[in-house]
Length: 379
Image 1 (cartoon, helix red, strand yellow):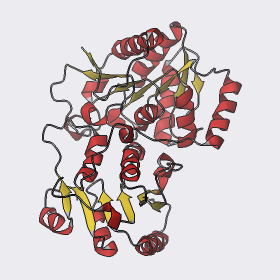
Image 2 (cartoon, rainbow, N blue to C red):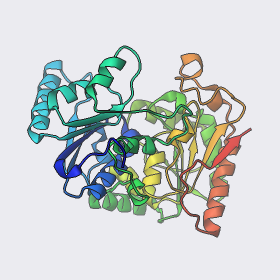
Image 3 (cartoon, rainbow, N blue to C red):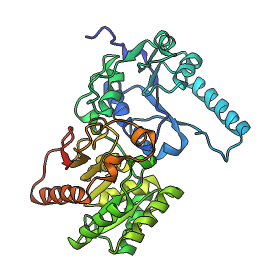
Image 4 (tube, one colour):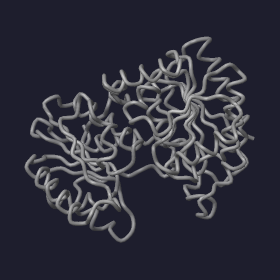
């Protein structure tokens, strides 16, 4: 029994905090499953940004989801302040015994001061706040120096600090699209002439442009897939940057596609991915949505680390450049320029080969889920 073990019979409510983006929030879903399995009586709540709520709604192990309003230019400061004060009052009324912070967002400090849980945990933080950070958490998670531990395991390490060691089933990603999203997607598929398992999704945009392939390379990939007889569906968020990239790809592409970009909610995207034969995506939320929906995925990585962010326990291929020993550098493009040479020069043929290989393999036999990246390194 580890020294940090907690008697969970004395714990009634737990708040799990992760103020990050869509994919990051989805990767927290096993934490709730593991908590519920270990202590079924516990009410486990989530605190996330409002725009990511669809990643966790309908999760059977979550009691309540609380949302913080992310900074927006269209929201007056006074309105945001009132919203945050209401949120704090709501959280205080829940009287949490345990606070689990899965990132080192500065809000973790004031949450532990305001909520005063008996137990709290967060990843170790460096810099000016390091000493204050250590003093204010009963447990601090130390990440491995080799940077090859998947983010899901890093999240679950917060529970291990309290003596909870999740089994294999609790490590599964959980994403429930819901009946409304599934019905909407069935109607869209019928209107577009798409059959379940009869199309490939290509998701080219990312919230950070330095993770994206040049549009002409994505266009070439699509043309080759269509020559192979595949129906290709394009997806992307309603953001102007996403729609601009999709427009550029369609301008370069001479093949027919179905374009759902800007038309789907995140729940609808999950439902659509659940019906696809394969997903091809840059390092972005759809990679993790595909893993949650158990749809095979080809994930394209540039500056980011595939060992941390690879598709989780689903048949997959990782495509990354082998010509750039500097990657993964975690920089916002080369030198911070916003442009990543390891993606600018990544051949479309490498992505195509990975997709063909994975589809052929899946057609021939069913593989067991893999937790480690199955890498297809581009020359």
